[in-house]
Figure 1: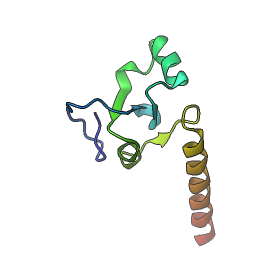
Figure 2: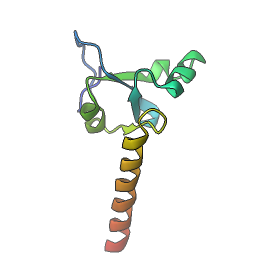
Figure 3: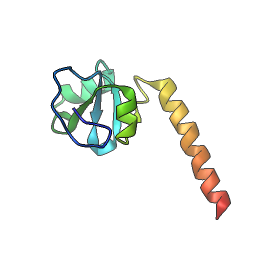
Figure 4: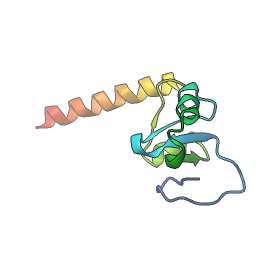
Length: 90
């Protein structure tokens, strides 16, 4: 599994969320998009697991738009607001 600090560690308890490190994305283990990519042979070398959603976010991953649409939309709104605030401060 991957901890909030981004470091891998062994856990006796399986993760509840999966992630794809190149895109810094996380989602449910039954995500149809992730399953499709894994079945095609993609994602597997870069697949990570998280104990919970908070750990995934702390590790710098964003929610998947397909399996976590509400969290994805909320994250998009917050990111948009943050970009606008930075632009106004310049």
